[in-house]
Length: 336
Image (cartoon, rainbow, N blue to C red; front, side, top):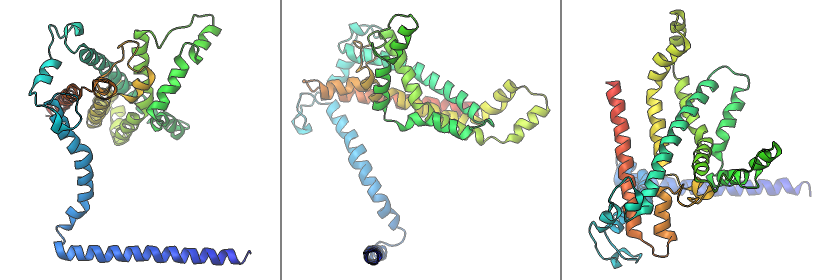
């Protein structure tokens, strides 16, 4: 029995090697013939074609269908069965007596989601960039166990946002870990999930905790690209730490910061999973975001208002494009 096993293993390996060589030979014959037919220059399109097909089917086609739904009405899913309504969906979405008061709007939930998302973006992006930059500067120093701390800060990024939300929900619920600790120290339980102010606060905290490691690594890479000779020369000239940070670190880190700001802004506007799993938009509509609003009225609601949902998504996309272009323009002006 001990002598038969290596022989069987060797035979299996030979069989797999022969199968692999056969597949490689067939592919070689196929692509050589295709190259003779199309020419060497056109072979690049052959290798790009699968990616273009995936982009067209899963991104470009849904975008075109989304525009179609935005200008049609009814509850039918098939675009051919939906009547053309022109800009009626846009008019309904922006029908407000006062845009500062969501209660005066025809689609009041949309404007509540707009205000909630705007507040979330301002606080989340600001704290995200601030804490990420501070963490990257600390991790860029010669600390003992620096590699370990880098992995610790990046670990939450590897977790699923749903898992992160459920863990924090368990910690912050009425009879959760946090309230248990408060009770042990003689404090009363705090309703973190049913109080709108606390819910908004913890949504920002949890999202910063979950995604901060990703942006920290980007900023850390930007810091490591700055030559140490610049800091040494500034130190010889008597510059303080703050002066070196202001006149060396920030100017040379600006391109990396622009990438971080754009990515953080896009992710913050499109936030859905972590808030949906944590509060489901509650309490009430305190943490209702734009993407959740689109999901609720387009798929979760029995009315299936695909037209309004598509209109809201197009509005959000336009705002994101404009915000990104403004950031790029400001950065270009500062460089000029």
